[in-house]
Image (cartoon, rainbow, N blue to C red; front, top):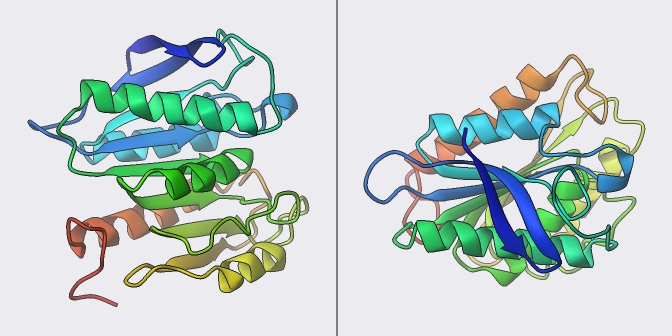
Length: 224
């Protein structure tokens, strides 16, 4: 789990990066919760998502947004953090120039940034979003969503009720051949306290299904 320091839009950014398996592994970027409410790349769910992609042979990175840990800069209401994420993906693609495709995952605030990033980067063919706070952020930019993904929510989330986020998913239009799924984890709160294992198991099941039944362009085949 080597530490990496790379140039961001407002100074250096601190991350953890693991090279994938094989000659040209795919790329995965994992984004952490809100910087102003204790969110860092070492958040439990963020760390476990990172490890999930590592186990599947992806070249994987998680990093601290500006102003968090050893990353320079100051919180920027999401705009700067989106620029940080785009820079992190650029960095990963520079060291993985032949990666066949990319995935992005995010938790809470990080899922909002992840979905904005995939709207701008066609190489992202899949996403995993945890505790997406649809009551706090506007997701109307998903019009239509260009990638298939899963949104996983705690059944007992008191920060954002699951029906708020499931409604957002239902309203989201997708491009042809793309599908956004919504799943809940019984008994789990916003941070999946005591339920991180169930959260990761849900994410793993989705990821494995996608990897087994997908064309290079990100469309399903042979399974629905």
